[in-house]
Length: 267
Image 1 (cartoon, helix red, strand yellow):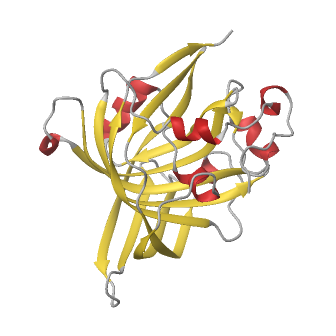
Image 2: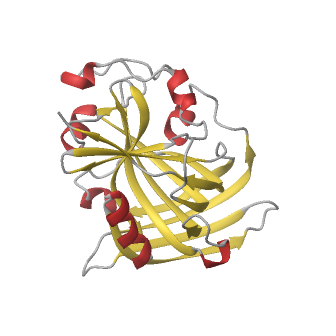
């Protein structure tokens, strides 16, 4: 499969997809000062294909949909954040909280492949307020739990994760899955690589577009079996209800450096 097809949409969406070289280049460590550190742990990636015309009205006009073989994707990503802190703060003072993201894949004029978030739910008031103020991201305060238990089979673990937005009748997500043996890293150019290896996020803030880069090692992967999933977040974000068998990935985690946003002004 080739992710470098051309979107059959008008305007900027008719541009070629980013090259493989562009997708690899964003993994390089940026120059300059840091905005913070985080450790992302026990990431479950659940992906569904969607027609590009369904997603296009939900994404800012300054961003083009990033497609794989002509198909757009949305992803649900439940995980745990550890040691979230500003530069210079010791890890032991960092925040720990559950977080779940709903996202799709975008680029800017054939460059800077990244993600666009429809929502981010986090079980930390400080994280929600900080991300909204500093980055303009659509964070929501939520509460949840995670249970991790060894399975009967050696090397397997069972994970039971749930998170619900703190509002009356607020949407949430619940996932139960089993993690198995390590796998090879995602191969550049593959669908796995397209869906997982993302290092830029783009967010619209009034008349400006902000781009935030993170740096970390490529995701280590493990085999995963999704045993149960209940999701109301995507529908709450205006996306269609998920159907069909998703593509699923799991990573035990990476240590992440976060860099300050780059700001571009719309003409």
